[in-house]
Length: 273
Image (tube, rainbow, N blue to C red; front, side, top):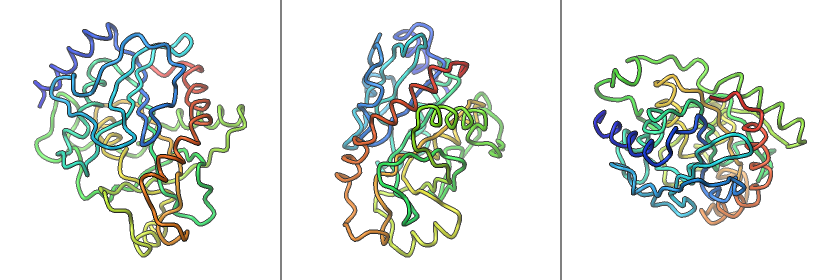
């Protein structure tokens, strides 16, 4: 695996020069966020050595590298998921490769279902912590010592200083930003109403099918992570509508403006490298 990661790292550096210190990973239906990026180069996932193409609707599967104001940023327009049938090391391969190439801070976004009937669809939730219910971890198997320790600490999986910065920017821009716990499931079926009640009792505020493996892999490597969920719908049993991926994509697009403003404001503050 290290040989493959190093080959991908060299490829990314050859395309980007000095790789940006900040990476934004955009979730389902969010590929249009940060369109104001002044793009220097754009790379399709499948052109990166040993990396899979994105196969899920709403994930364009491109890595855009450029400038937001004075800051160089890499924007991953889509991600890979465990439910696509990929082994966990391949799910987190993109983030590991970018971290090895030089990225220090990762701002993860995702589309999620709200676990409270009081949640507003199309609202944003800053991830305070997560509950991993995927049944596995990207760190299973022999430890890659070159990346990090066998037993990494996850006490502050989502960097407290980054979270404070997100809250500051949200308040300044009058963006409605709640804060809560993200429950990560492997999917792809949506949750049953009984499962939703259980996740809520466990302390969850939103539920989704991504981000958790990436966070674990990146914290293993000592990188800083922040996460924002776009609450695209109420989870099963909390609303009368049937859950569909089309609804998720549509509502994610409606949140583009506030999410772009929030991410752009955080990046503009600088000091994320």
